Image (cartoon, rainbow, N blue to C red):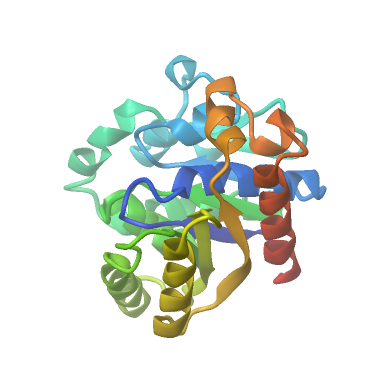
Length: 253
């Protein structure tokens, strides 16, 4: 049975989609069968694995509003062991479409049940906000992985995210756990990055991954080529870091 991990942080620009794409790809490289579910209307998770988000018939949106099944929404990528459910700007309207829906918080959960046994990992790339799509992901997930950028305001917003997770646990998904926190955009040249890591470790009782993702130019370039980092530049520090993270995640099964 697959493990469902939602990658979430309502703060934008923390490496959430970069982590979703590259964790999924590096798990696939470890011969794990992986489904990446893009529920961010920006659709960067979709294009980041080489799928044209504007040329897809069945997407996360059509699945959520009941116009197609989850099986019909799954697309095989060119990356071995990695499938994707695509997203594009149409998903931005999902919140309005779901206003009157019964059990709207559980749509993703009920769809996931149909394919959970086909994958070892299902990675959900959440939007950078705490909306109905993120709540759907949290209701469907076993665990939440939280990327935190190594910057001064790293802890800002984390309190709110933890509060939301607790609410979801109480009301919608009592089995939800924090998968762990992963530090991103680490710059070894600055004292600030080190201070942020120490600060978060001191303030957070959650599980913190040993792997720290560095700032890396190749990581920034990879999405424009529609490739995860392990395929774009296999020997880069970004690729090595996400491989280590994938190993850590896989070992926790």
